[in-house]
Figure 1 (cartoon, rainbow over the protein chains, first blue to last red):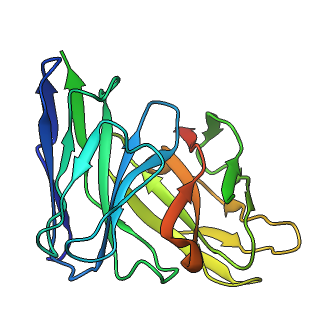
Figure 2: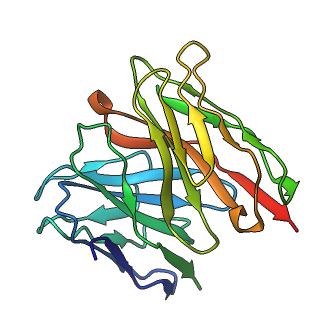
Length: 114
Length: 113
């Protein structure tokens, strides 16, 4: 079945440590996105990528980094510079960045800093 | 810039009641409009969409009509079920801005039996 897989579902991190969240898609989509969701708030865009080896900052990129070495993979690293990293992180993909098509979402990773 | 405003929740209804969740948007041109649903602990699922004015999106008994004149995309369902309890997000996408969805804050729906 085609879809987006995020792992792990739950992640705990000590303060001061970097952590990487995985996102893989087998939908053959060009565009991929990372969103952050906080309680009672909508989704905010962290980074997005239109094609392999290209990515752009979203609205809240500070303290995060990404890579897009393969079409199907778009990992997100939460660095120690992110001041408030505890949140629910959602990865998404869409066919192309310039089409008004829907995005497909993974099941999310809940990150907790302890 | 582009933005989406949803009615605040939570919305609490009895089973079989009529549901309306209001959504208005600000955007230049003609964005595509979406409703996504999020069940507890899960990612978002597309519920319905509309890509041009006067289009009606529908799925699983839910409907929303793209109203350009009032810049609205209100979600409705004639008879809700307990299983509809979730968070509902209105969103827009505009190709020339990049297909980066802009979301509303979400509306929690609770349906009591």
